[in-house]
Amino acid sequence: MVRLEAIYEIDLGEGRLHINRPKADDLIFQIRVDAFDVKLIVDKDESRGYAHVRGEEYWPTSKVKIIVGRDEDTDPPRPSFVNGHMDLTGLHPYYDSRKNAYQGAALEAADRLIKFFKYKLHNPNLPKLGRRDFRNPAWSVEGGMPFSPTLIFDSPLYMPDQGFGIKHLSSQSMSDLEDALQNPIQPSLSEELMSDAQSALLNDNLRQATLEMAIACEVAVKQAFFAKATPAGAAYEYLEEKRSVRVPVVDLIDSIAKSAFGASFREDENSHYKHIDLLYRCRNKVAHRGELMYKDDSGTVCTVNKDTLAIWWGSVLNLLEWLRAKTPS
Image (tube, rainbow, N blue to C red; front, side, top):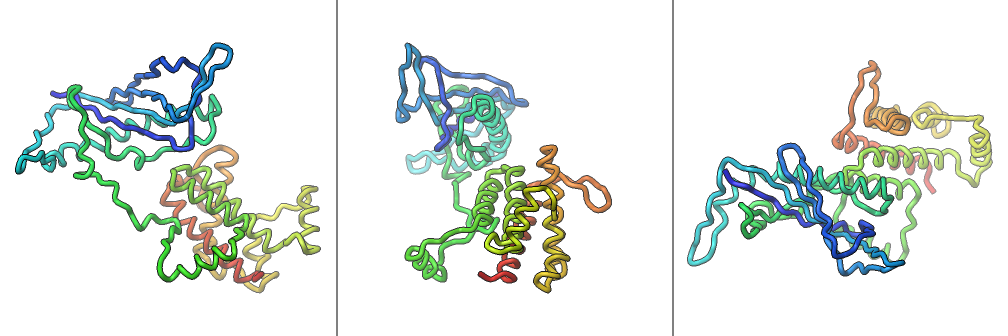
């Protein structure tokens, strides 16, 4: 049996933990996560500066170290030497088979720490970390010198197909970029909301993404039907403020669109229409109960995950494109 530890160095980027303790103090917290002993160390960040106010020290940091350990029944293999150089290739299977479990414990511990600072101490800009933030730890056996076989088994290779509408600058889009540099893009509010929703999805903030996708739909639909510069827009805004009218988005893009544009999104894009309908059912559950779920037409409760939202994401983009085609500027 051997004690194995994975050591993760986390940088919170623009997020900062705001501390009111002497900088000489060690901020070390030990907890248990499932079968793991976890040590969280709030590291000093000299680049962030500090302040003395009425005899007390205040300092921010974006650096956290997390050490995850447990006893393993099997000792890791020893590295071999090839032409006088250490070869860590043979260690690959041992650490690769354990990395996900250690990574999960580290992620859970970090999430608990960040939620406290974010929601109890109201520290802003703290990110929701994902597994990609916990790649390639340094490993330590029985308190020995840590080593990191990074390039062997978990190189942070770039993944070109990341989904959610991400496109790459290509030779075909170079002229579009050159045009945008000469003529600055002015994104619509719905485009800004969808961009925020995309970031939320990729950072696993699924409830936030659900709300922002639904709001993006509503903004785009109501702008298409009730532009402020028109009498209809002014009338609708007045009635909304007086709470005299509430028209669901799914009705606006169906029968009302048929009357206004001679086309219905439900008829033209039925599968996408159904996804928009489900998005709004889920949006209501998130807004009213904080739950990522919806009831289908049979009354069955369906949970929503990232894969579900990826499908809905495509349907929202389809709706926005449909609206642009029906209401050219």
